Image 1 (cartoon, rainbow, N blue to C red):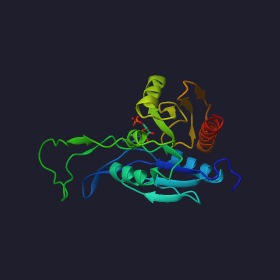
Image 2: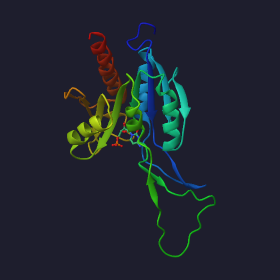
Image 3: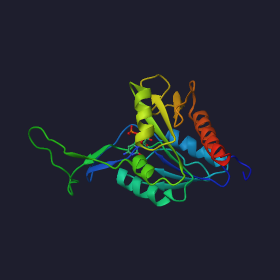
Image 4: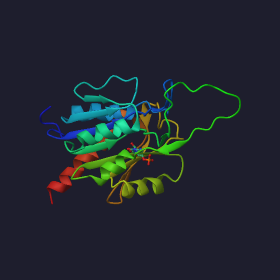
Length: 223
Ligand code: C5P
């Protein structure tokens, strides 16, 4: 393992969905299964990296050798990722972080009543964005799940989030996105180039992403 291409590197990965509490029995979440993030964690271990996996609630076995930190809310995920950010050489945000959370968490179970019920929401923290502001040498990779104008959105995220790569998938395409064992992605890089990958397993997608990350380090070392 010592000779792996990521030997001596620490990879911080966020994965899975988050849960945003409404009351003691209810929460807001999404369909993320964590498969893409766990696949990257597994491949990074194989390439010799130290892997810190910050994960929302999922039904997956953590890859052997990865350090798992279980979290629920976006705020918890942010705190856990922040805690390990300085140790990381690479940060990969695959988590489907909730964009909004209930503004008030009810201490007791909300009772149903006649008529409609509104739920006031507030923005959560954008983990990738905030860590992008604190970047000091880390190679940062984000994901973009889009249904339209993929290139425009991916390139927007590259600059807004101060990322080195955005891995975009069209979640409307068969074989891409949530829950599937395969994915069809395009990797948009900071230098303006893009790599279109055909339909492949999430492990293969993971290997392709990590190979690009290794290239980033090689480029830096040759300067
Ligand atoms: O802005 P958008 O949610 O489309 O960006 C997706 C990317 O940003 C993913 O890498 C995701 O993990 C990350 N993200 C995050 N915190 C959020 C929202 C998204 O880290 N609150």
